[in-house]
Amino acid sequence: IFHMKINYLNIYNNLIKLTRNKKLYIKLNKPDTFSDRLIILFFHLSFFLNIYKNDKSKKYIQNLFDFIIRQLELSIREIGYGDVSVNKKMKEYINLLYSIIEKVEMWETSSIKSKKKMIEKYLYTSNNVNFYIEYFEKYRFFLTNNTLNTFSKDIINFKI
Image 1 (cartoon, rainbow, N blue to C red):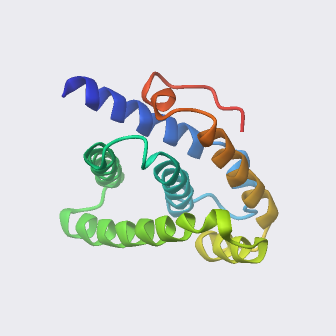
Image 2 (tube, rainbow, N blue to C red):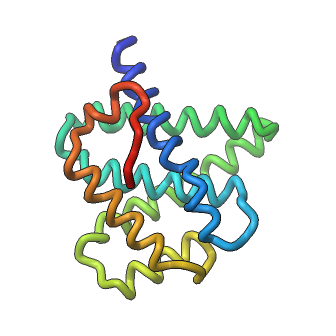
């Protein structure tokens, strides 16, 4: 069990490292917010789950998902939200994550126009939308060319 938690933590840390890519926020042309970072993390996580959902058991993927949600809840508590606020925020965030997961499921077969609408909807911007489409295409390609185990080891250097 300890080994599994280390794997989950490494996956989580790698997703966070991807999400901290400064280019992703500069291209938004608006102030960097916790909400924007969370949405970009949700995109990374959604593509990750979409690509690797068949590589591991449903139980493994569910446990990973639960672990990441718990980490997010801890982060929200660290920001200073109280219990009532955390529960309300977590419900909103989980609904948002499920919505993004649903859209990412159709990414491969979606038109450029649909992808643009999706990026604009979730990032609340029409700035540099093509950059985000291209970025997530490269990220998806990276995921398909690497195993889930790549992410479960120590923090890796990404070339996306």
